[in-house]
Amino acid sequence: MSSIFNFQSMLAIILLFLCTCACISSLAPSLLDINKAGLLGMFWKCARIECMSPYVAVCCIVMAFNILFMQ
Image (cartoon, rainbow, N blue to C red; front, side, top):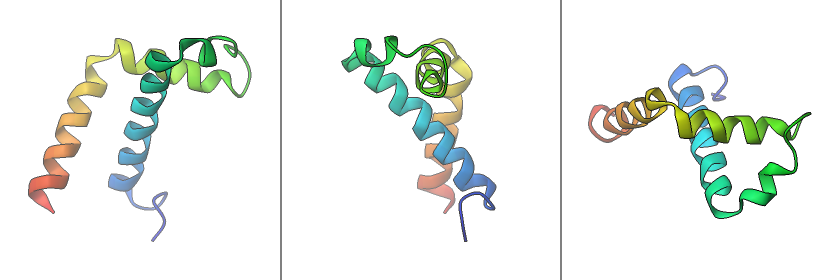
């Protein structure tokens, strides 16, 4: 089944995407800072969402607990 049709897999992909954008932003900030608008600006925006949101951190912890202990 595709991850689009499985809600838990879709959430895991979104969280991984946000965390990856934040990691790229911390390692090479100039790579994301040159594209703040348009389609590539989505990566810059996702990096800012992940850095500023404690909700993303809580979701990552809950998803890790769910994957490790519930499945």
